[in-house]
Image 1 (cartoon, rainbow over the protein chains, first blue to last red):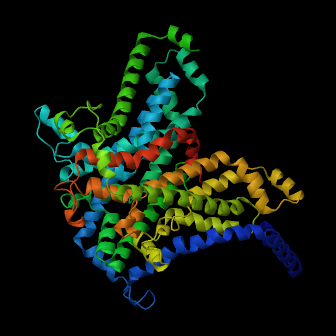
Image 2 (tube, rainbow over the protein chains, first blue to last red):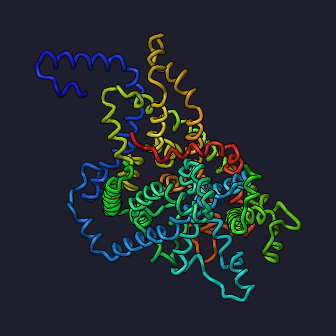
Image 3 (cartoon, rainbow over the protein chains, first blue to last red):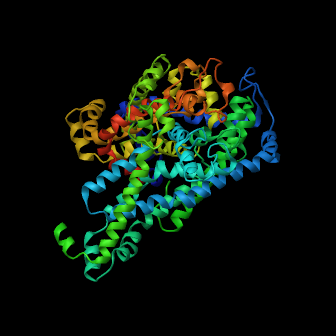
Length: 317
Length: 296
């Protein structure tokens, strides 16, 4: 490709063009293989992006996409002036921030602990156990929470009662919704989250620890001065990835934990779009809401990537 | 090495080790306990479950819950359907991903750069739930199992990782095969794929688990309750039937609120395939960490 930039004469241009044509002809089977994938991308990945134009229309299924009227920013204006906009933004951001504060450090700390284990079978057993919940679906995790935390004879509430405490409505109250979400996240993903940090730690030169031990450094000091600096770049990259995903709250989990009693705190962009769009049939309006979320998410991801590069870390894009 | 360590262990080291192992044992127990409790509860009789709450081994295990859930074909049909979707869906995923990743792994392919841009964009931006629904509807996939397979045929993330993996095959090997008159398809089937077996096994695993656990797409695209996959059925039985919590109006009039052990049994059955495959999956975990390297 670089050659084309320096080309001056028509003759040379012609030569390059014929060479390209010859190369493409030679690679025709490769292009043939690309056809299904490219079609897939056009229809199912780029199709919906063009479908976003429904946000600027009054889409009526019986009129079809092209015949529905353009209405400009009507749906966006309506959304921004509704009180639900602020509720959704608040709920989404608060859940992300709580996850950042309580869930994000968990895999780092657990990885530091696992890294200190010298007994191999013990390490393997612990890892096998803590990776398992990652492979369970959110419906299963929420289902397990329901059977454990229900007020109708669930294990946790029976235990609270047996030690003389009051029953807590974990599943259908506004105050317990967010703690439950964070708790589930920690239970399901902490173990799996350690993998990436353990991989970073596997690259640390063992002789550094040996030298530190000879100098009389305690285990805590070794962690502080050798292990932590070794995973710092990974921690920063993961943190930036999280910041870029701050608008995402995980539909499966929130939707399954949501009920009429906790809706004021549990409604996030995704669940709102589902309810308004598919249950109530306001397709254009909910498309506008979804588009707002995607655009803010896009800006955050790009900003996070810039930030990573500015900090001298590898970007994510 | 080990014995040497033991000799020079100071009292401080020993305290450190005791604390370390205690914390990790607690973490492991907290992780595994809910799972074991659900399994145990599914074998308990209603009486035992309400009388003695702290059981991990029921005193008189019964199969009542399992007999109940298999007394109608709702659950077994849903399991069979989900197994089918998982198998077919994973095959489609692999075929589509490999077919697209291979040409893109050839760095001298003209136009490759633009295709890669196109794919990378989909990593950070998408049309979202409603426009995707409208497309799936427009191509006539609503209420068909293909809606769980075709719209998610390629994960851009996996595609880029597979492409990166193919790219590691030495260029000289490809050139040599071509000089020997090997066609592109033969090259892919006889050289690239066999060399990529471990990576492909990892992606098979992740695609398959994804299909088994898929909830949102099944909720969106399958309106007919007879077609429900296991996760949607599970939500119906375990979550929506919770007295006072679920929306009972969503269920039929003949719906009987299931007992706690029945719910547990359904959770066990819905998770069984994952747990059975789990030991085989483990050796591929480390390769799954390629997650950090989506560049290129």
